[in-house]
Image 1: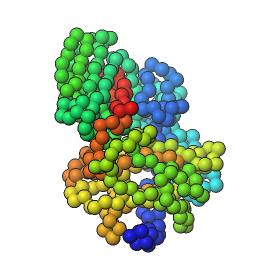
Image 2: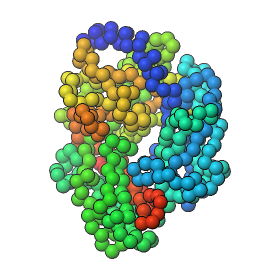
Image 3: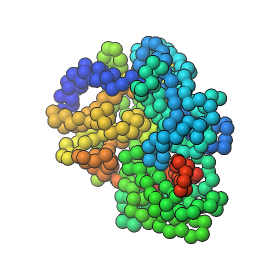
Image 4: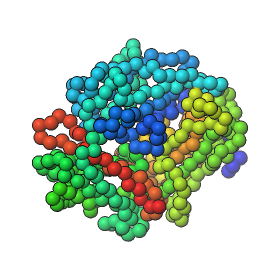
Amino acid sequence: MMNLWRFLLSILLLTATAASHAEGPLRAVQVTVDGDPMAIPVISLDNPGDRIVISFDELSDDRRYMRYELIHCDARWKPEGLVDSEFLDGFNVADVDDYSYSQATLVHYVHYRITVPNDQMRITAAGNYIVRVYPEDDPDETLLETRFSVCDFSMRVGAAVTSRTDIDTNESHQQVDVTVDMRDINVRDPFTDLTVVVTQNGRPDNEVILTQPLRVAGDKVYFEHQRPLIFQAGNEYRRFETVSTTYPGMNVDEIVYAAPIYNMVLATDYPRAGTSYLYDQTQNGRFFIREYNAVDPDTEADYTLNHFRLEMPELQGYDIFIDGDLTGRRMDPSSRMVYNRATGAYEASLLLKQGSYNYQYLAVPAGSTRGSTAPVEGDFYPTVNEYTVKVYYRPPGTRYDRLVGMTTAKSGK
C-alpha cells in the first residue's frame, strides 16, 4: 500500500500545484489584535489605542493597487445599510498602501497590511464590521472580505462551560451557560432587545444565535439550560510545522522538491473516534507564519504545497473538510477532501505559507452546512475548547445591532 501511495503521490505532485494556485491569489489571511495574535478580533470602542491588523499575501511579482472599505453588519454578519456617517468619522475608503515584497522565495508574493481604525477612518459605533478589499480600478470586484468587531463593554458578560450537560455527563458534549448584567443600561425588554452569539474555536458552521433567555432576575439575564448551547466536545486540534524546507518539521514525513516549489508530505492521519482522549496544547485552529532562519517571516517565509492524507473507509453520505484558519474556515471545494479508492484514503493539497498550523477534519452530511467532529475526530468531554460569547443590544427605533458585551471561556484543562 505504501509503494502505491508513493506512486500516486508522484502523479499528484505534478498536478496539485496548478490546482492550488487556481484557488485564488490572496493567501495567508490573518486578522489579529495588534500585538496579540492569539486575541479574538474584538477591540474596544473607547480605547483609541486598540488596532485590528489584517495581513495577507498576493502571489505576484508586482504590487496591485487596492482599496478597502468598512461595512457595518448585524449580529448575523448581514450588512445593515447604514450611512457611513452613522458609524465612521472620516472617509470610508482608503488605499492599501502598506506592502512589501517577498525576499529570496521560490514563490514570489507581495505582503500587505491594513490597520483599522486609523487617522482617516475612525470608528464611532460598536458592532460587527466587514473589511472589503477591492481593486482600485474595479470597485465592484471583491478580492477579500474579513471580519472584526468593536465593543463598547457597557454590559458585563459571564460564561461558564461544563461537561455535565443536559443530555449527558462527562461523555461527549460541553454546555455553555451565559449571564448578562444589564445594570448600566436600561433595557426595556430583554426578551426582544438582546441577541447572544456563541462560537466554539472560531467556527462559523456551528455558531449559536439566541434571542430568548431562559429567565430574567433583576438586572441579570440568564441564557442557560438551552439545547443550542450544548456543543459537541470534539478533540484537540491536529498540528504540523513547515518552518524548514531542509528538515521535516512536526508531523511532516517527507519534503519533496517538484519544480517550482517544495512539497510537504504530511504524516498520514487516522480517525481518532473510538480511541482514548490524549491532551495536547494547541491553538484551537489558528496558524502562525514562521521560517527557521527568517528575520521577517512575513516576507521571508516561502509557500509550500502541503499534502494531507486521512486513511479510513469512505464515509457514505458525508463530505470531509479540513477545518481551521488555514482554510479560512470555509467549507467549499478548496477545503474538501477527495476519497481515493486506490489508496483507501481521503486526500487534499493546500498551498500554504511556511509556519505552524492547527487543523481538524469535519464530516458534513449531504445537504448540510454544519460540520460534525464525531465521525473522524471523536468527541471527548475533557477537550480544551475556546468559546466566545458576544451580546448585542438593539432597542426599538434604532438602526443597528450594538455590541455591548463580550467574553471568552475555556473548557477542559
